[in-house]
Image 1 (tube, helix red, strand yellow):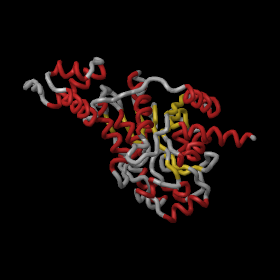
Image 2 (cartoon, one colour):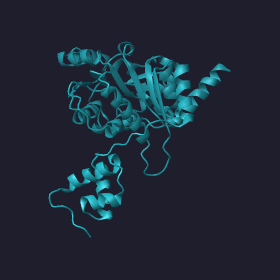
Image 3 (cartoon, one colour):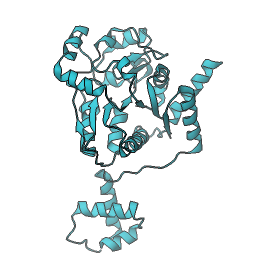
Image 4 (cartoon, rainbow, N blue to C red):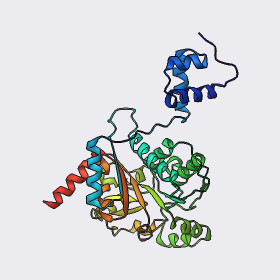
Length: 327
């Protein structure tokens, strides 16, 4: 076995191996000779680079069938952009958000590289959390990142502030906190919280966002509800939402099948930008999976979206539902 050069740490070796493999196009045998380590060591070094998050792979282009779905969704739903990714196989241990997160990271990176975003608005959820995981290190020191809804939820890894905090580490930009919960206890409590100067300052910045990235939430009657998992809504809330005809949660607001805000008390307690304020935003939603089909169609019908990043299952079924409505 060859001995590694004593001048390089394990982290340094892992990064060198990754660069030689993915950028230089070297084989593992060539890397082993160059770094003076064994081939098995090279394999472990490249795996370590992946574990450190140092390797980010973007796949250029899409299969023709997915491009057709993108074009059809853009045409029929008046979208400026649409990205449809292959659905992840439903296997134990597979990350169902991996493809969505990678596509969202690729889109966000392209916008940041173009310097077309000065203020980035952010929602919450697993897809956006995965987007941050997939985003490479960037130099965007002038970027401001702000939540467009209450930042305090019970599970840190999924709340808007944690997404922003990790984006600050990835981009070097400036992050902001909206220091209120997603839902107030009452409409009166919401009014008091929203009138706080610290909240108004952040809301003012959020209304100026050049791009707003959001996730979409399924309602409990459609299957799994992240809001119920986190304890943000209870069984009584779920019953009332079902009776009101709620199909989707968008930034704490619940909409019906036609994309209209439902008449339900919980909507009066949501803290953040209103739907009317969001209508002036360039909103791109990231959502996929069978349970998000009707949720996605609802938001598309609302006219709030300018962009959609989804998977082929949702894309095909949304288009099928649109076809049914036309027959």
